[in-house]
Structure formats: C-alpha cells, structure tokens
Amino acid sequence: MKHVTLPGGESVPALGMGTWMIGEDAATRAEEIASLQHGIDLGMALIDTAEMYGEGASEKLVGEAIRGRRERVFLVSKVYPHNAGVKAAQAACERSLRRLGVDCLDLYLLHWRGSVPLGETVDAFERLRAQGKIRHWGVSNLDPGDMAELCALPGGMAVTVNQVLYNLTRRGIEWDLLPWCAERNIPLMAYSPIEQARLLRHPGLKQLAAGLGVDPAQLALAWLLQREGLIVIPKAS
View (cartoon, rainbow, N blue to C red):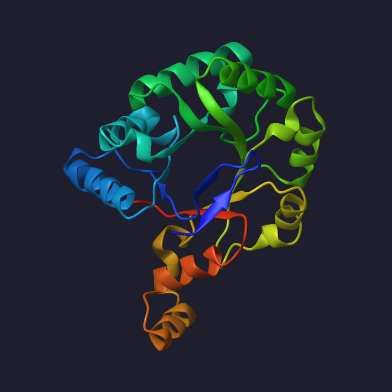
C-alpha cells in the first residue's frame, strides 16, 4: 500500500474508503459492512464519513464495521458548516463519536465553508484536539482563496488536509489548488475518484483499460494514485 505523509509526519494509506450513501438501506447493510471490513484487511484502512451522510446513519454503520478493528483504522469524519462554531462543533463531534463508538477521531474536517468564520472553526478544532477528541483537523471543498485565508489565521497552518472533488473528468484543481497545496505540503484527498461510477462507462477509458488488461476503475484510481500527496477515497461498496 502506498502511503501519504501528513504535515505532522504521520503516514496514512493513499487509498482509503468513502461512505457517502452507505448505511441508508437495511437491505444492503451486511454487504456494506463486509466491504469496509474487507477493505481494512487489504490495507485500505483510511475510512471517511460525515455527520451529513444519512444524518448519522453512515457513521453508525462505520462504527459497526470497525468494531474490533479500531486500532487498524485511520478514521475521518466531517462536521456540517452550521455546526462549525465553538459550542456547536463540540456537540457535533461528541455525537459523531457516540455514533462511531470511539473516543477519538483521527481527522475531523469542515465539510464545506459556511457562515461561521474560519477563525472560530479553527478555535473549535483546536479545543477538540486539546481535549483528545480529535487528533488532526482539516477542511473540505475549500478553494485557494479560502485556503489562503485559513492559513493566515492563528493556528490555521495546522490544517492537515483539504478533501476535494478530483478525477479524470474533474481536473479544475490542477490549475490552482493542487499546486498551491503542494507548495505548502498540504495533502489533498480526492472524493468521487471514479465520478460515482460514471467513469466506468467512459468509452475512451474503457478502451485504454482493455488495452492494459485492467478494469476502468483500476485505471482511473491508478491515475490519481501516481500523484504524490494525494489520498484517494472511492466508495466502499
């Protein structure tokens, strides 16, 4: 398994698992849990979830999947923008911890920027870290202007990762955000890396993959994984 080194020096798997729209259907619950557990066993031990996913249903399923495997998992969750204030973030994080059945998150992300000032969110995250409820914090869906504003704040350079949409057909970050973060050694985390399965039907990608003797999904993921400082989180199902 390739790994990515976080700004603090910790190494995490470059290929992890996303859980958007997982845990919302009782008929597929057992299969989804089995998928996550199989991924952990294969070394895809970074799992990303969020309080938004099924309004906590995804976190509950992840909690069940990692029971007995917690020490092997780098666990990521995300807070709603309207819960990113000091008091609200404290309560939201504690709810996520209860649903996941853990004492601490490895990484806690601001899901996207909202009306709460970034400085207040940094303060909230740093308080949670001091309390031992999270180990690292980061952001998601922030553009270069947002990142520059964040990193100029007191404590803002403690940001560990920015999770963004990135795949073969969504390459806008290559113009500005990707090089901006690379210059500052801030890893990116790519969600929807196979464009929610739409890339599997792309004629050009199918032709290239067939010529190489691999699946389109494998080729799409490999194209991302060859980049340094990039974590890739396809949906685990």
